[in-house]
Length: 431
Image (cartoon, rainbow, N blue to C red; front, side):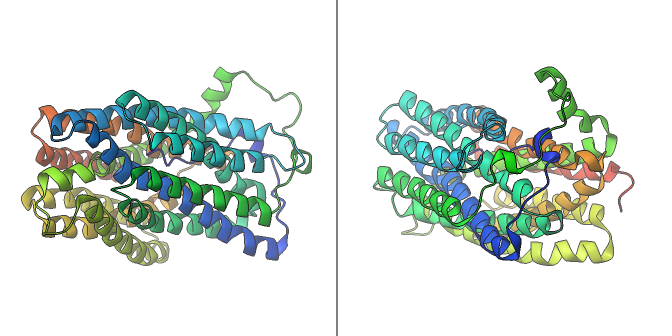
């Protein structure tokens, strides 16, 4: 899974959003939420259920081969998808058509991803699965990059918090929806791929049909003479990391995400090989139950923790405490490797991690080096979420196979997450 938002380009930062009034926003915001729900249901349903089952079926009864193969496929595909995200953003930036500049990529990426997962569902070798999932990740990131760029294009500054909240809630719901749908098709994997891909296409068509996508000539362009080469652009893009507080927030998020994805990517195998499930409960269904428990905790605690941190003006404290609790929650399955232990882990970790994400995003906005480059620098922060998804499958498979198994995976995840939370301690200038 590469659920990474596209960094906003310099062109986008100079544009004035051109929303079609209050009525247009009423239509746009729900569609943005639906779009993100479809995207992350696709990522999570396939990444957490369908893909592990398909890889496992290649070597029935051979746990070590399944773990190694899943780590390889998921890791390489995450790299591929992450590379296509900024490419998709740049391509949609430069598109000029009567259908707008985002719409062709929103629909085109969705349709391409659908046909690729349709083929992926029938793949019967590791090479075919790997190639299929890499290409599907690439197509989905072309779609997702354009979808993410809709906010700076069409949402006024004073409503972007609402837009971000709608998209954030959609991500929490997507975990339940994606794994729930995938769990219905454990015996018919190709159909599961078709359904998840089809939902993305359907929502993409609705979004483009019901909302207005400004053409490039409707938006102000970059001032003449400001084009630079790729190296200089990359240097500008990463310049925020030279600022101490921003770099610490970046490191904290990256480490907490790494600890989280060490566990999440192998959750199906954890429930199959490490945890004894109640009679009649299959691992895929168990993933859905855990995702639901985690999502409920995330929504409830985030709704309380975010506003409370605003009222008390203690965002750093909230981020630190919730990060520490999230990391320590990973010790629960290590100390109690039971189904009950996993349920408690899902509730505590989901609640704490959701609160951390809400408060950490607010914290990040307070340590941005420059208001003029806030969109670009928040794009840099997205790398802290995307990067761990690339390396987590490789690290997790190595730990499972060579460093003590699934119990050690929870220990390492907890230690890495704790380091990330403690990085917040050294942030200055924010309470």
